[in-house]
Length: 304
Image (tube, rainbow, N blue to C red; front, top):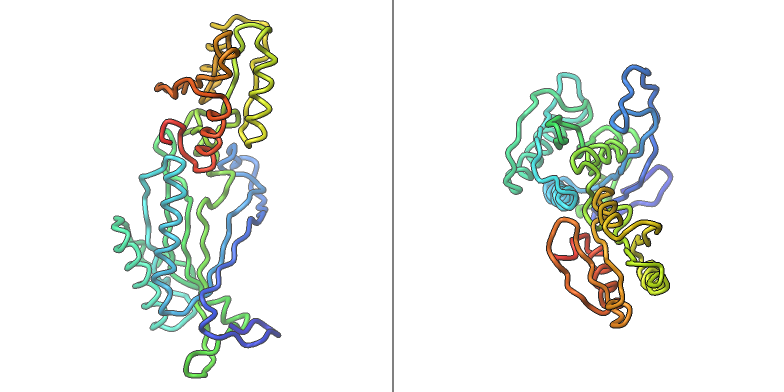
């Protein structure tokens, strides 16, 4: 497209996709502030896609696929989806509104998602899809948005050169997956009660030495774990093994490994998932490699 003062861009260069994490400030009244759910300063995972009308449906499906993939990683698989259509006051031709609305509908059909229609609930500059997720007590929170925009390309004079040589206006798509990142993590905290998946847990692995005699080996394992990018630690010490295990469970550490004489002599660890299951005893270097790969793939170690 042709940005103000820029060189002409061919239709073959589209779609263009740009993303950023942008900070937004709103002066919310003190009585409306609500933990992470409603704050005065928050961060949006904002992105803008510039595409041809013929590319719009595929781009929307791509955004919905990305949304589904990301939300499911956090355990959110049930959504309330709303399609908002043209309000009374709007910009853009009837034809472009109809095509964009049909593209949004078609994308939802291709995904096989049920949705409701909010007639006239779209923005003045284009129709949109809103996706809401539920927190632990059943409240719905606005999360992801896919929004067509016919206004900004027009106002900024954005154009591309079509295959026929004419100058045309691209369609702009706003998209956010998390919406407010702070609000999303508020929902995640309540939904998991702080019991995070392994890959996102603040502490992924805790080493529990049977006695201080085994702490040097724990330090060696810890160094290997941190070098692999794992968030690991050694119990602070000064308490019995039973107390260490109890504290690891209370603090919802996903994995803990008891380190005693057998582990030191065989240079192994046996990391036990707090939620059950068994990884089995293995050389500590192999165990660390396995855990690091699970963290990189955003899965539980037992799923490797």
